[in-house]
Image (cartoon, rainbow, N blue to C red; front, side, top):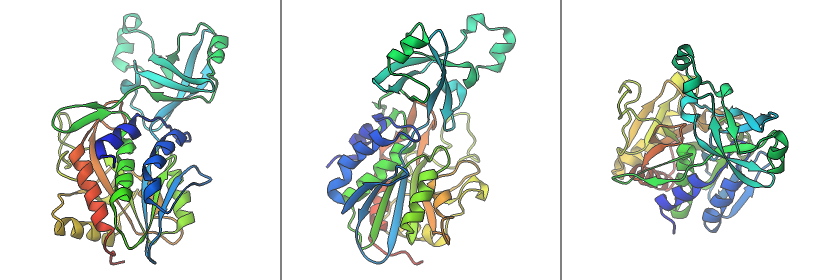
Length: 347
C-alpha cells in the first residue's frame, strides 16, 4: 500500500488545470480502484468512487484541479499570452518554468516580461501584472508555435516536482489540493465503514466549485466532508489573528469560512469530528476564516441543503509553486476521517 508521501508525490507531480483534470484522475484511479465498488467519471469531469454500505450516505470531496494558465493569443514573434485559471498572485508567476499541454505532447516554456533593466522607476515600483507577462517556448513565429502543437486554448501548468525539506516537511506545486486527494485516497484504502461513501475527486473548484455542485446534486448524500488545504499563521509576515493555525498541530475542522459568506458548517458535523478526534486522541484545530472557500460552500447549498464541514490541512505559501506541508498533518487527517467513518453522526 502506498504511503502518504508517495501518494502526494504522484498526485502533486501530475498536471491538471481546471477543466483538464483527466491526467490527475488517471493517477488517482490506479490507487483506489481495488478499494471501492465502483469508479466512474461523470459528465462534469468528476471522478466518483463509491463504497457501498448502509442507508446513511457520506460524500467526501477533494478537488483535483490546480491553478494554472491557458493560452489565449499567440503573436507574430511566437510569444503566447495567457489568462489565469484560479487565484494567482502575479509575483509568484513571473520567471517560472511552465509546461504547455499541446496537441503533440508536452512543451516546456518560461514566463517572461520586460526585464527590470528596461523599466522606469515608476514601473519597478508598480511591479509586473499578469497581463504584461508572456510565455516563451523558443519559437520565432506563430507558425513555429503551431508546429509544436500549441494553439489558443492550450492548458499550461507549472513545471515543478515535489522535494524534501527537513523534519518530515515537503515542498511542491499543486498541494492545493492534491493534499486533499491524498486524504481521500488513503481513507478509501484504510476505512472500514458501515456507511455508503461517495468519494468525489471534483473538477473545476478553483474556478467556482463547479464539480462539487453538480456531483452533490446527483448523489444527494446525507452529509458531506470536503478536504482541502488552508494557510497557517506560523511564519514571518503574517499575524496570528489572520490565522491561528499551526503546521504540525493536526487537521483544521472548519466552523466557518469567508466570514460566513462561504460555509457556516453544520454544528452537528463539527461536533461529530471533534468527538472522534478527542476520543481517539487525534490533535485538531478549529478554523474560522475570513477569506477563501472550498467545495463545501457549494455542496451545502444543493437541493434542500446538505450538512457539511471541511477538514483542512495547513499548507504554507498556497497558490504558489513552492507550497509546503507537514506529512504528519496529512497522516492525522487521514486517521480522523477513517475513525469518523466508523460511527454514525447525530444528524
